[in-house]
Image 1: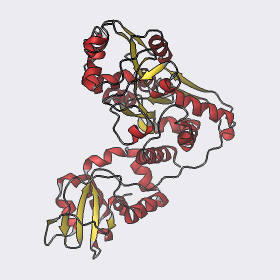
Image 2: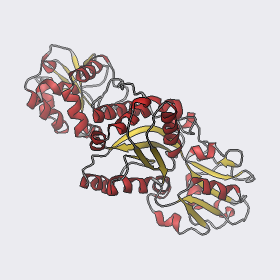
Image 3: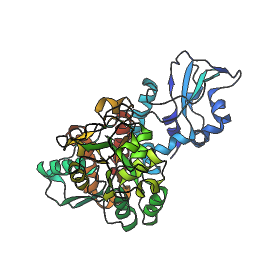
Length: 415
């Protein structure tokens, strides 16, 4: 099975003018064999036998992914690539003709007799095209549940799926990322989990225990919005330090900033099953949830609409939730810039907004094998997501993340 497949990870292109470490008398194959960061790559080379790609006269540059880079491809995806010659050829073609724009060099290049070796932190993949799905030809029920943040996007795409002819029953429930993973990984009653945070190790183990190999599907980017009442005339920006005080020890707004009024703070935050709560606690409080949960006058809800109502009903209230819920209620709420940067598409793209985060679906090839309609829906989802994501109030995923999502769905569906 392994044959010449290891060349999936070998790239021979003209090298850029970089500083190099000399390794006289060593071929590229020898350099790979001697490098402890390339043991996964080396095991493929050994299994495949000598490869012509490393023996060419050159000068060549071999971009070699380090061991950690292979974590991006679950076993089922790697096996699918290795068992599909057309896809393998496309990957090899990309490696031969592309560049390392989406990868980062992790060490200075090392010169070999026939070129140079460059270690990189990720795999380089070609553009993945998914098969077209006609919703009217899809049969069977589909159950989706999880993040309230991802809900508007998944609900919009499910509605479009129905409008274009799908006659089955598709449900999308907003219950929070944690509860979504509980249903998906522990109870095994849903087909897809919406999530505004990555899956946790314990949740992965729960999935494995019921025979599910959970994998992520990147579908967009959220700029978590910190919001105040439109009547709030003073909170025009917050530093991260002020933000932490605002949602923990501060009793009044004056405790956050001496120039602000001595009015009690009313806090409206997502519930503890929410990925939004987890993300905020991690980014602002270094995972110390007690600091936010112990704050006075704090109301929690898994329903973001309840949070919107709470903040809009009190001029001294504050809350946070996914950008979509701010966008839908901007006539009654203000989004407070963080570190002087407002949540927006431009600040998400350039990384300057401190509270931007990826949005995911989670699926499993075992589910798709038994319910092919789930795979059809995921293929459809990725084919239209960039048409719907901004209307839902979020921002497109980066191209590399979306492309990897397409590859994983193609592998899981056998597309």
